[in-house]
Image (cartoon, rainbow, N blue to C red):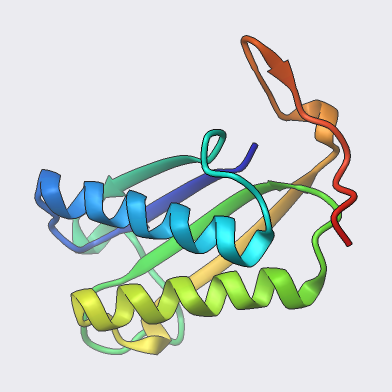
Length: 124
């Protein structure tokens, strides 16, 4: 039951936000071996003065805080992170140095909706 939270200085239309959510959900389900029904995505736009990254070069920034269930391998997380950054970089002309992904892992029972409580990951 992941929560994928994007913060960016890119100005996005409603259609672009929808496209990001759809593509990132697709990448997540593929790389993390899960289904799409429980993937939540938020996209927050910020003024360029509101986001900072020490290594950044000229251009827009994007950060992803991926709140996920614990148990996925490093390789799965890395594949999702790289695929997401590649997509965002190519689609919105974001320099590689201006992107960052951070994973925060939770026990399955800490991830819940009204009708369900997440279980432990056992896919590997």
